[in-house]
Image 1 (cartoon, rainbow, N blue to C red):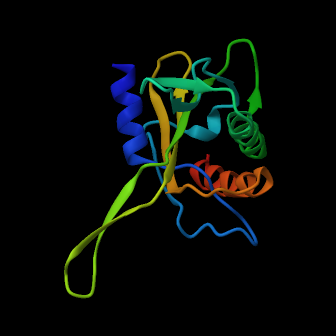
Image 2 (tube, rainbow, N blue to C red):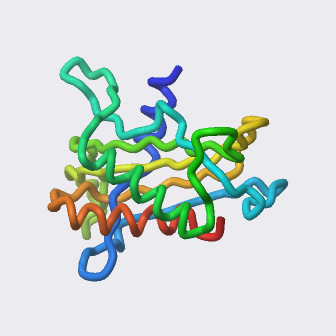
Length: 173
């Protein structure tokens, strides 16, 4: 079940974003709030333990990655939540933060050429999903996705792209 959920997520969303001199126009962000709740009333949070970046191992099984990007994503989510007045806590949080991200270096996209003929080209992609969940009820408060092109960039440029995506994903909380 977990594998199917993650596989579906990776098909539908992307990660990595950029500010300033780093291009971000390929990053698409969508988010939905639970209309029944006031997100501003939630002040403290805690990350769900199983959150992280996943990658496929040699056997095709998805595994959590302990990469620099995984640490970077969590750091940026923390920064953005704190900018919105939310505080991390180890005890009795108001909400939980779950996230999963990954990339597909073998992704392809189909396009039509000038003559209407379909052309398939390789276009590596990445995705990130962030979900905020009420810690007491388990009710989803907000779900946001970001997807875009996977770019082979140095870590500082990846940071700019991730910051852009996460900022958009958590805007208005």
